[in-house]
Amino acid sequence: MSEGKNLSQVIRERMKMANKRYWAGDNVSEFVSDEDKATLIKEATVAFEGVLDSLLIDRENDPNSHGTAKRLAKMYFNEIMAGRYDPAPDATAFPNDSEDRYEGMLVVRSELRSMCSHHHQPVSGVAYIGIIAAQKFIGLSKYTRIAQWCARRGTLQEELANDIAREIEKATGAKDLGVYIQAVHGCCENRGIMAHSSLTQTTVLKGAFKEDGNTKKEFFDNIKLQQEFAPR
Ligand SMILES: [Zn+2]
Image (cartoon, rainbow, N blue to C red; front, side):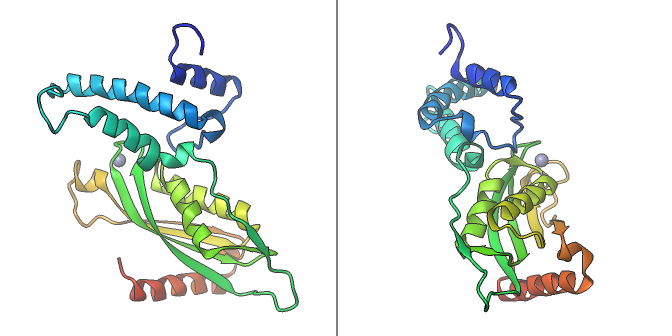
C-alpha cells in the first residue's frame, strides 16, 4: 500500500486510472480481493465510529452501541451491498438447440432486497423476469441469484430493472426479455412522506416483449397468475 494512504484511497485511484465507474450501483469486484475486503471493513469500522461520535452516541458505555460501527461495516460489505464486491454468480448454461428445443416463454419470480442509493433505506420487492429461450438455458435458481446480485447494491429501482435485464441477457443470450419489478421503499415509508402503502413498479421490455403485443400480454398474464399464486 502507498505511504500514508488508506486502502480505499489506493483502490479509488486505481479505478480512476482505469476509467472504471464506481457509483453505488456498480460492481467493483475486479478491483477488490477478499484480503482487501477485510482491510476495507476495518477502515469502514473506524469511519462509522466517527459517524456515531458525530451523532453524539456514547459507543463506549451504551452496550447496544458498542460494536455497532463494526456491525455496520460488515453488513455493508457482506450483506446489503455485497453485490458490489462479489463477482457475478456462476450461471452454467445448458444447450437448448436440439430438435425438441423449448420455444415458449419462461417467467421467474425473484424476491428482492435492495437499498436506495439516495437515503440508504431498504427496498423490498419482487422481480418478474421473462425470457423467450434462446440457444441456451441457465438453472432456474440462477435468475434469482443474478437478480439479487444486482439488487444488493445502492440502487434506484429504474436502474435496477435495467441492470437485471442486461445481466440476464448476458447469461442466457436471450434477446427477447422482460423485467418487471414491484417494490416498497423505506425512504417513502420511514421518512419523507411516511406512506405505508407506497408501491413502485418498473418495467423493462426488449425484443419481442417490446415489439409484439401478444408476447407482452403473455408476460403480464403470467405475472398476474404468479401474483394470484403468491401475492406479496
Ligand atoms: Zn431513497
